[in-house]
Image (cartoon, rainbow, N blue to C red; front, side):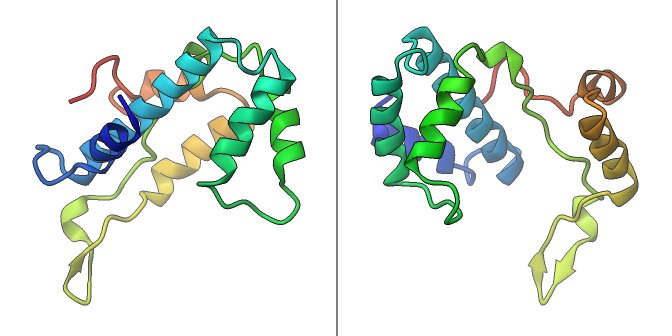
Length: 144
């Protein structure tokens, strides 16, 4: 995909059966493919290449004042062994989407009780167990 095709892929929702939820999956799938491409090319293993990629990304991303190019390059290099299979993409537990309505707009709320279990799993580094107990919350191998 070139940049324009990638934008079309990650922004699409109206023709997808799951609408915004399918768009979220597509965005996660795109991130997974970016991680795969970057790691296959060993970009993070070469600080100069990592700096070049960070510079390109920084033009499209806004960060806090304390997180600049130097910190992002350092972060990229420190995660040079990371692979897409090491990253878990998931959807936080949601309340019934049909129940949210604010000023005539459909709104989806987080399920606070179920979410608390996920946040605890994140805090205790046990997301794998949470995913095992919540099948379907993770990103599938194939995406529409």
